[in-house]
Every structure is written in structure tokens, then in C-alpha cells.
Length: 110
Image: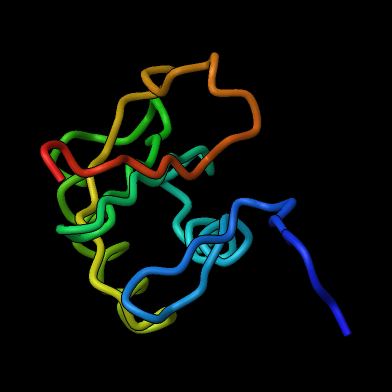
């Protein structure tokens, strides 16, 4: 029997009954050659999770819009969740976050 407090050592999070973490998203993101592989997820209780992906320097702006839509569709098919997907330019994601890729944002005024 397990008792007491058990905390997670990874970045897995549950949204609308679906448990996922960075490895699932990494596998999906690696299928898109226009992405660098770096990303951040912001999870809010009252809205869709936000996925911010870093695009490679060589990617044209018009292709970034296609990438955004394709990533959103692929995540919906693989995980079963609808994400808000945004693209960040190469080097625009904050470097000081360390290995933390999922940010759980508390609801304001809750």
C-alpha cells in the first residue's frame, strides 16, 4: 500500500482528463522539419493549452502559418486535445526556464 504525499518528478500534466508531457510533444514536433524542437506549453484551467514552438531561422513567415495549423492538427490526432499553437522566432523562447517546458498558469481572480 502506498500512502502519504506522492509528487511527480517529470513535467506531466493532466488537461481535460488527458495526461501528457514533453516527450509526447517532442515526438510530434520532431516530425516537422521547420521546427527547431524547442517549445513551451502553458496550461490554464479555463482555456486551451498554449504550445509555443520555435521555428528554424530558414523558415519563411508564410510557411510558419502552415506549420502552426499542421502542428495543431497533429496534436489533436495524437493526443486528443485542441491546443492553441503559436510560433516563436529562433532564439525568442526564454532561455532561463531551464528544463521546465510546461508552465501551469494559475487562473487570475479564481
